[in-house]
Every structure is written in C-alpha cells, then in structure tokens.
Amino acid sequence: MKLARDTWLTLQYEGGLVVRSPIGIVTLLFQPVAFLLFFTPFLKSVLHVSSYQAAFQIYVPSLLCISGLFGGLFGGFALLAAMRQGVIARFQVTPLSRSGLLLGRELTLVLRVGIQSVLIAVLAVILGLRLRPANFVLALLVLAMTVLLGVSIAYALALSVPNESMLPTLMNGLAQPLSLLAGLLIPLTVAPLWVRDVALWNPWAWGANSMRALFMDHIGAAVVWEAAAILAGLSVVAVTLSARLFARELA
Amino acid sequence: MKLARDTWLTLQYEGGLLTRSPINIAISLLQPVTYLLLFTPFLKSVMGVSTYSGAYQIYVPSLLTAMGVFSGMFAGFAMLAAIGQGVIGRFRVTPLSRVGLMLGRQLVFVLLTCFQGVVITVIALLFGLRTPVIDVVVALALLALMVLIGVSISYLLAIFVPTQTALANLMNGVTEPLALLAGVLIPLSVAPLWVRNVARWNPFAWGANGMRAVYQGNIGANVVWEACAILAVIAVIAVTASSRLFDREIEIEIA
Image 1 (cartoon, chains in turn orange, cyan):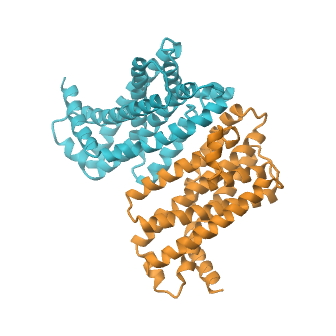
Image 2 (cartoon, rainbow over the protein chains, first blue to last red):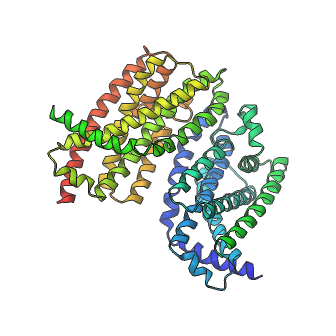
Image 3 (cartoon, rainbow over the protein chains, first blue to last red):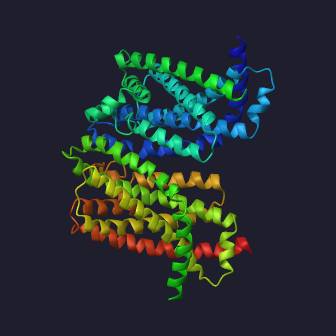
C-alpha cells in the first residue's frame, strides 16, 4: 500500500515535469516521424505489400518498439543526471520508500513513451493505418513491459557505471544490436535463419512480433500471449533487481 | 599559395587533436560496424541477392553515405564548442586566412570520414565483399565531396541556431530525411516512383547511387561521373557560402 502510494507520488512529480515541457516530447518525435514518412515507402516496396495500410501494420509496431527501446535505455542518463544534481539525495531524506522512488521514475518513462506512441499511431492512422483501438491498447501494454525492462537495465548500468562519457557508448553498444536483431527495421520474418535463431533470445524481438500480430488483428496468435508472458516475467525480475541495486547503492 | 599553406596548418593542428584520442575514433566506428554486420543479412534477404558479396556491394555504399550525411552533425557541434571556448577567436588574431581556417577544419572531417570508410570497406572485405579495390578510391572521392556538403550545411545551421539543444533537434530534422531519401537503408532502386523523383534533388542520393555503381564494378556507368559532377559543383558552392557567411557572422559575434 505504502509502495503504491510512494510510486504514485513520484510518478505525479516526475510526470508533471514531463507534461510541463511538451516541447521535449515533440522534439523526440522528429526522428520517428521522419522514419514513418520516409522509410515506410521503401519497406512497402521490398516486402511486396500492396497497400500503405499493410506497410504501416508491419512498420508502426517496429517504430513504437524502437522508440521504447531507446527511450527506455537512455533513461539511464536522466537517473545519472538526477544523482549528480542531488535530486535523488533530497528525495532520500523524505519518508518515501526507495522502491517507490525508483518505480515512480520508471513509470514516468513508460508514460512518456506511451504519449509518443499515441502521437505516432495517430499520425499513421491519418496516413492510412487501420487499427482496432482495443488491439492498440494491448500493444501499448506489451510496449510498456519492454520499456520497463529497458529502463531497469539502464538504471542498473547507470548505477554500476556512473560515468557520463562511458555510459553513452555502453548504451549504444547495447541498443543498436538489440534493435537490429529484433527486426525493428526490416521484420524478422524475412531474415536469414541464423538471425531468427538469435532473435529467440531477444525480448524486444518478442515484443515487436507480438505487437505486429496485434496490429494485424491476429489477437489470438500464440506469439501474443507468449510474448506477454515472457516480457512480464523478465520485467518483474529486472525491476526487482534494479530496485534492490538502487536501494543498496544509495544506502 | 598562402591559402593552401593556411589550410594545411589548420588541418595539421586539428588533425593532431583528433589522432591524439584514437579511442574516440574507435567509438565512432561502433555504430557503422554494428549495422554492417547485423543489417546486411536482412538486406540480403529482401533484395533477393544470392551472396553476401552482392549484399555488401549494395549496402557498404549506403552505409558510407549515411556516415557522410551525419559527419556534418558532429562538425556543427564541434564548431559551436570551438566558438564557445574561444578557440576560433584566438585563431582569428593570427595571420591565418579566414578561408584557410574554415577549409582546414572541414578537411579534418573529410579525412576522418574517409578513414572510417576505408575501415568499413576492409571489414566488409573480410566478411565476403568482392569489389575492384582500386575503384574504391573513386567512391571515397564521392564520399569526400558529400562530407564537404554535410559539414557546410551543419556550419550554416550552427550560424542560425547557436544553442546546443536546438541545433541537435534541427540537425535531426534535416539529416534524417536527407539520409532516408538517399536510400541509406534500402536502396532507391527498389523505392516507389515518387521517392525516386524526390531523390533526384538530393545530392546524397546521387552520391549513394554513384558509389554503389563503383562497388558493383560499374565504374564506367553514367551515374558515376554525373554524381561526381553534381557533388563537386554543390560542394564548391556550399564550402564557399558557408565560409563567407560564417566569417561575417563570427565577426559580429566576437566584436
């Protein structure tokens, strides 16, 4: 109960900061919008799909997933900055629980990616995507779990390597292969066998595949619940571990 | 003569700074090498080419084009930082010519990107690329022209938007569409007609297509000399315009 309340308080505070700088959210949209407008036509041609509607069904889930991956992993910089500026230390002297403080910050990132995803999806719908709202909500839930997983890993890395010049290299070295091997540019279905075998071990590949099934209205597909189960398990483990590390490092 | 000497002096100084931190050069290769090794398999499948050599012939030029487009971004930030730290101001009180100062700084980025291009090509050769190696020199010349254009665009943007964050956003807004519409991920040859029509106006698309012809062993193809001519003209205009404008703006800012 106390944990839920502490999480909610932190989320309110941090979320308020995000909402109060809408320009920050809009500028983060430049890159995904450029890809939505100018990469989808290429994908439509090479995958031989007949309509932009079908091309968006394939590509928008990838795009949301890649925004979630980078948004989540780069959350580590924000934590490091907050530690340096003494924001975290000041929160620690309040009666807030450590786990609530961490969880609230993680959920703020989830919220931010969620807002971005809704904006991207709305643009795609304007350009021709057709999608059931219920399926989109389920896809957002899958996305939220991948973001929780990513931000937990990022927090663990930021706590273990608190070095501003090393961290970007480390994050990029992690995020680029993860995104490519999850088929976030060209989907895994057309990849060579060895890439698909490697992707079985990549949670983001599961996330992208299940979101794609939801966008194509195959809500009963096995990959949807398999991905949900895998990601739920992984994100619970990752959040728990990062919360412990957080409590210990800042003790 | 004086211009050449001043350019060389600046190049030596800036290049020296660069080579003294080889770790940064290695880090800058991390992303292209990741794409080279992990994106090519996807491209091989969707482009229906039977060998990795064929896939690398298509993708290596794209990757080099992307590096050419984005190298400009770093140049703008480096210039902003140099102005902020007073480096430019200090150089300007020396007898160095203004144009030499600009040209020297731009050529450092050309050299760096060409070096990266050589490393990428060598890695691709190790993984199965087969290409007439001598011809690659022509591809690198095209890359050099693209870097000059990219750096000039970035200097122009840095003049008008002299804050780091706003510049980063603006650069993203300019470079991402330029790169995507040059076919740096999936080549233009398979793009829809409207994309190919738009790409006719994108110098980086000409560069990518020209380099691809070279890597595929068609160095005599029309697109190669057309790309060379178009890029050379645009590069001369871009470099002249950016160094003139920059010189004037800096004058005002420092005074």
